[in-house]
Amino acid sequence: MSIIREGYYFAGVALLIALFVGVLIHPYAAILPAVIACYCIYFFRNPKRIIPTDENLIVSPADGTVQDVVDVDDDDFVKGTCRKVIIFLSVFDVHVNRSPIAGEIKIQKYVCGRFRPAYKDSAGFENERHLIGIENDKLRVTVTQVAGILARRIVSWVTLDDKLEKGELYGLIRFGSCTEIVVPANVEVLVKKGDKVRGGESIIGRIK
Image 1 (cartoon, rainbow, N blue to C red):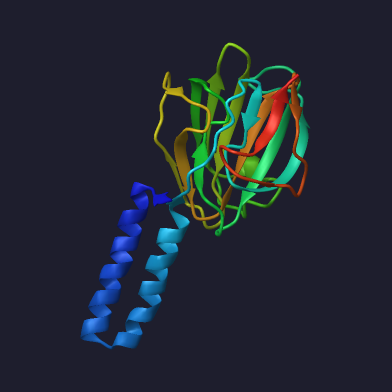
Image 2 (cartoon, rainbow, N blue to C red):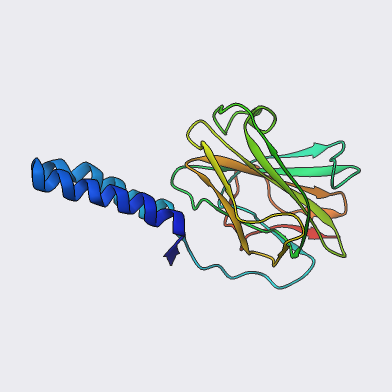
């Protein structure tokens, strides 16, 4: 298991503070920043995942707990009747996001908003969020990173026309948030509220 590059900055700063206060003030004063450094390493972890190869399977874009599975009348990108899977990420979950399918990014949208708790039902509409629409020759899906009360920074490493492999990293949300995926009606959703999922590995849907 590795950590993503953002983790080196946060962990490094915390370790430097621990060293500074430990030498200049007292060794006990270094305990808190050292613990914070360890948590940063833990938070920014990027564990290896076994990605399903079946092209008809859609994998989870994030680690966490399925907060809800709801019907959507229409989606600007997917079109028609859809279903949305909402995944809540606690501060103890892996926070990198992965592409649920292989495909090309055809739409990208960043919306400024509030920072309500990510478990609130209204968070997906009111909070700051980043959406990408991915398309291949079989289907379209949208994936939205939603900021939360602690997650004040959405990070994306992709842009329009980029090609993603299934399970490929494309971004993260810092520190506690939710991720939403919208799939078309021809996808059978295989998860339910309360299920635990792992990004890039857990199967959340199958093309009928």
